[in-house]
Image (tube, rainbow, N blue to C red; front, top):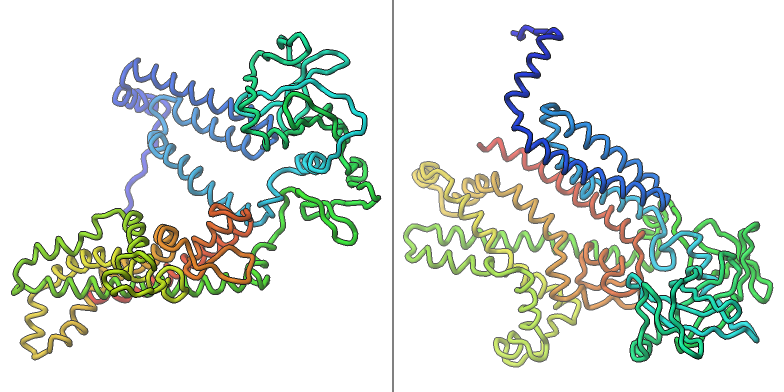
Length: 536
């Protein structure tokens, strides 16, 4: 039976609003606090909008404006949009830290972002010119010094013609500096707003200072100023000439490099100059993962091991945990509480600490396992591909069985005694009772936990990183990956965080592939477990 709909007139609505205001309004102080907080948030967002305009980040600008409108539209009117007032903060954080991160990962997966392609085309052109310079014969010498400003190294010079002091950071254009204090011989003693480095500091940072290049003006083909000693600088000219009209580089031998459309300058015969810049590459990273033999081989081996590790980890920890739970659930056993406390002790220690301890225990030369328990054996637990996998599974069994023991103990105690008593009266053996009654009933609450445990072990980065660091490494491949690497740790290495080259595009493509694998397994697993609900 439907509820009759009532329509409020304008006066009635105003009365309802007035009653709501009298009910929810908390006085002038909360109102003042709200206005102040809103003002601070608005100021912060306006500052972000100005920065976005300066950087040409139009998508970020649109997001900030949307957030600004929603923020004031929801919180400024008193006693309206009450549900939105509570939901808005959560939705904002969800958008930034979940949806935003996923969206950015997807975006990076379709680009060539990584070493050599990590900036814009304009930055790449400047870097190419700066990285291919030679000293201009007979160029004048500049009195100079090296200073710090806002944490960045700055080259400060005195123009010998105008006596003006100018300064700039690496690959930036020199600008005039006022108020500099010069010595009697024209050297730079102090510069307002700059921290002039001492001789000892210059000596410690020789490599950074030698790599410092500043531009005389905005002309892309203008000379650079460089120094090796800090006290004297000279003009350097790029050996590559850039033609903005044709968008090409020409070297001293006449070779012409043009924009390849893939984020780099190349000649007609394929010769490339570095660095390049970030561009969209479509499905190229996904194609490389499955078709490039140098990547496909390690990728498939790591994928197979990841599935094996996740399955064997869940199976072994569940089997041991369930066995111990059944054994300690026997009412005739004495000291059950003490045994149960001992069983969950590994669960009480932080997993990362246990992994580090086990890495020491399994050391081939000096580890406790080989030296004491195995009488001086030399088993290469962490350096042989097979033994390393065995070690990873054993350590994960140590870390994981207490959790399975706890959940299995709880599930066992939820099985009604009359069901088990009826089975005994019908003459069922212990094995038949376990296989046909206990296990099916246990799987009803435990199946979702096993699926989530599989997903956790599929991405068990901490154990792999701390115990074996994915090693031993694959031989004969340029991809940084090892025999015990999981997909997630391989992604970490491909992204360059564990050393080696950075390839964020390929790493993001791997991350998306992992997402679909985990999502597919979880969907199929939870759909299959619905059939267990009929047991209730």
